[in-house]
Image 1 (cartoon, rainbow, N blue to C red):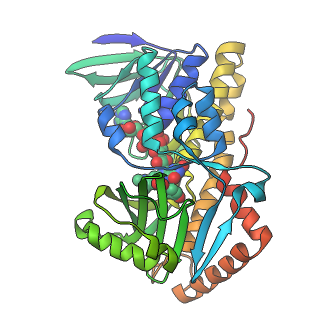
Image 2 (cartoon, helix red, strand yellow; image 1 turned 60 degrees about the vertical axis):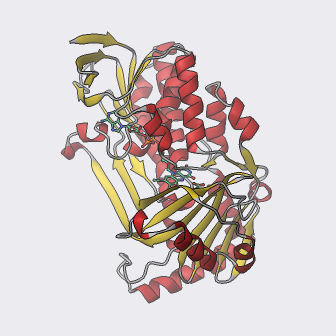
Length: 402
Ligand code: RFL
Ligand code: PHB
C-alpha cells in the first residue's frame, strides 16, 4: 500500500477539478487529483464553447488565461431564429457591457493541464476504483489503484469533481440526498468541422423540423448541433445527412452561406436537467456535473461548474488562511442558489426552442404546450424587456461572495 497525503483530494481532472486545483495551488493549498481515464481521453471529449465573464475571470485568477485571452473570441450578441424570423440579442447593450467568450472546453482543459504539469502538481491518471472513506469524520481518505498498486490518499477535504457518472455523489447515502431530474425526449447530435462558420454570432434555431445550433470555435472551425430522436446513433448520420438536415433548419440566408466539409468529430448527447441536494456531505463537496446537469441550450453547464469552484475556492481559502471553518457549511446553500437559476434558464430555453412532439411531461397535450411556448417566444423575442431577461441570464448572473 502506497500512502500519500494532501490538504484537498480532488476526484476528476475535468475542467472543474483542474481549475479548482490550480486556484488552490495559487493560494498555497496542496491538492492531488485522481482521474479515471487518460489526459488524452479527457481532451477528446468535445463539449462546451461559451464561457461567461465570471468563468473567464476565474481562469485569469488561476494564471492560465494567456491563450484564452489571445485566441478566445469575444461575443457581444447571439441570435435566435424562430418561426421564420431572426432576432438579435445584443448581450453587451442590454446588460450594460457584459459579453461572453467563445473558447472551447478542450482548450481550457488543455491549458489547465499544461499549467498543472508545469507546476509539478500530482495527478494520477488512469486511477481505478476510487473509493471515498470516512467523509463525515475528521480525517477522510481516498483509496484507488494505479499501475497495479494500491494507494491510500489522506486529506482534510474531498472535492468530488468527477462528473455525472462519478463515484462522489454515490458516496452520499441515498437517504441523505434528494435528486431532481427531468429527462428530455431527444438528444443533440454535434458535428465539428474545419469549415468557416456560417455566422459571426451563434444562432439558436427553432424550426418546424426541430432545433439546430450554429456555433463555432474560430474563424475556420465550426460546431453545429441538431436535435435528434433519443434512439438515433452517430452511425445513423453520415456527414452528408447532417449537412442536408442542418440546411433545412437554418434560416434561409444562413443556409445559403453554409460551407460544408468532412467532420472531425460527431457525437450525440442526451438532454437532462438534474440537481442533487445538498451538494455537500461532511467533508465531501460535489462540484460541477457531479452535482448537476443542464441541457446545453443555455450554455450553462461548464459555467455552473465554475461558479461552484468559485464558492469552494473562497471557502477553502478562508479555512486555510484565516482558520475560519464556520464557512464550510455554507457551500451547498451558496452553490445551489446559482445552480437553480442556471437550471431554470436552460430548461426554459430548451422548452422554447425544441420540438417536443407528443412527449410533454407537463400535464397538458403537446398542442397546448406549443401554444404556451409560441407565446413565450412572442414576448421574450419581440420586446426589449424580454430580450433583456435572456441577455442577463445568458452572460451569467453575478457570483455570490461567501
Ligand atoms: P466532467 O467534464 O464530466 O469531468 C469529470 C471528470 O471526472 C472523471 N471521473 C473520475 N475520476 C476518477 N474516479 C472516478 N470514479 C471518476 N468518474 C469520473 C471523468 O473521467 C472526467 O474526466 O465534469 P466537470 O469537470 O464538472 O465539467 C462539466 C462540463 O464538462 C459540462 O458541464 C459542460 O461540458 C456542459 N456543456 C456546456 N457548458 C457550458 O457552460 N457552455 C456550453 O456551451 C456547453 N456546451 C456542454 C455543451 C456539454 C455537452 N455535452 C456533450 C454533454 C455542449 C455539449 C454537447
Ligand atoms: C458549443 O459551441 O459547443 C455550444 C455553444 C452554445 C451552447 C451549447 C454548445 O448553448
